[in-house]
Image 1 (tube, rainbow, N blue to C red):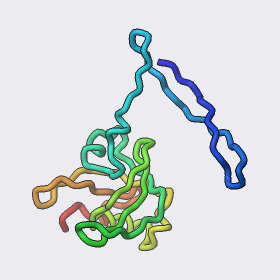
Image 2 (cartoon, rainbow, N blue to C red):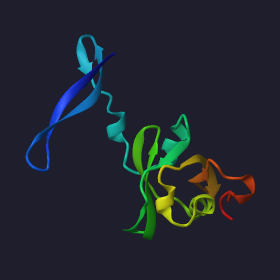
Image 3 (cartoon, rainbow, N blue to C red):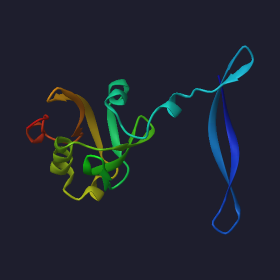
Length: 145
């Protein structure tokens, strides 16, 4: 395995070229360069499967969140980072209660905060539950309450 820093250039606001460095980890088999496409197969949304496979099971909130119109109605979404990957997360009601109970009702105050993730079974369906890292046990909603 060889790690290279590849210099790319992007066009700035006023037409100037700005250098950016892109870290590329190259793998070779029988002299052929291989590229791991695992990340390309993942979607933009945080899923139960990704949480199950996460070594840390910890997310960091990186955006204040917004409401999005979906086929299921208006849903609250947050930009999060889990294991170095940026994802969009639609927290369930219990996760929102946990986060709001610890960090406040204004989601912009959640930016930079961490939460531990677990998988719970609610009405026969597996779902992701977030518990803020600096919460006390008595304020945590355990799902389905």
